Amino acid sequence: MKLCFLGDSLIEYYDWQARFPGHTVDNLGISGETTAELLFRIPYLDLTTEAPDCVIIMTGTNDILMNTNFLPTYEQIVISIRQLLPKTSLVACGLFPMTISWMAQGSIPQINAELKALCLRYKIGYLDGDRLIPDAMTSHLFFLEDGVHLTPHGYTVWSKAITRHLHL
Image (cartoon, rainbow, N blue to C red):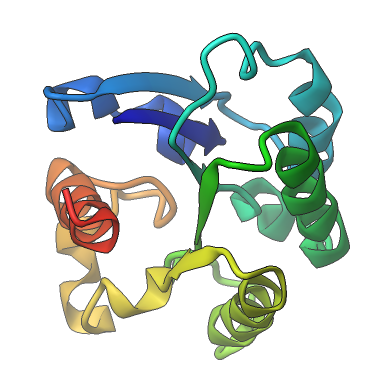
């Protein structure tokens, strides 16, 4: 199976090929990228030469850090990928329960609920990011000190959830 991972540093900083050794993996994550920047680069990605079987998307974290509503842009990302790769399955990963001091409690679950609704509307897969991390008491096992980026354990939990979702 050919997998393509799109998104920000949460994608870029992990060795997805090592996690999925029997598959062809493209890691197209870019640290610091927003949803608008991802949308802009989609037409320039070489995805059609050998189309992936599945595109896994994790984006929106940098938009949240800049206090930007990214869901309309996320919808355009889904539409663009669908038009470019109509036979490829898509999986959107919801945001993780990041620890950001200025963010209102409950913001991430609300955003993820809206993202899940978008995924249902477009009939694409959804992986609930805030359900992967059990509670705030164990968040140090999943996040680095910045409260945003994942520890090796966090990546293991996330990649296992992707494996289960894709039935690999």
